[in-house]
Length: 226
Image (tube, rainbow, N blue to C red; front, side, top):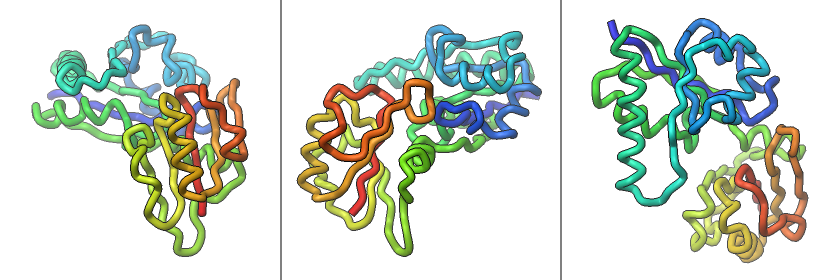
């Protein structure tokens, strides 16, 4: 029988936010796939290792997931990653792919999942605490109340939208275009707060648009409310 591929969210950074189920799956399986060139350098690995130290003795499989915009090239890398995982699944071994945050929200594993399922392999997703839920908690701000809708956007791809829909917004993937994102926020008239490296050791919290630096780091998440 072929193994099962698990996409496992390990939460946003604080090891205490990793679920019991994620920890159990890591303990019970010997093949742990980690996004990055060097498995033990990955943030997801460091989170998991703080909860499950024995992960260091597992068979660690680094999975290269380059941050590039050329869809043809990145699709080729995703297909290569799927084939790598399949080489273990074909041995009847389960593979646990650990990922930051949640396994269903802008997750690198999603792209691999499509190839695995198309090739007939079984995939199971395991939820983790999403970064925007952790950020809202750290900033002491409810994401939604009463009948407010919540919109989650990859901000770098939506700079012309002007946040036109009613309700509150979570803006992810903002860092590379932060100055433009801040302009969009000002045009919207919304109040905005931001968490950078949420729940990690180098966490920074910002409570207004003017406080948010243009050179914010990659793990930056904005919550914008009416």
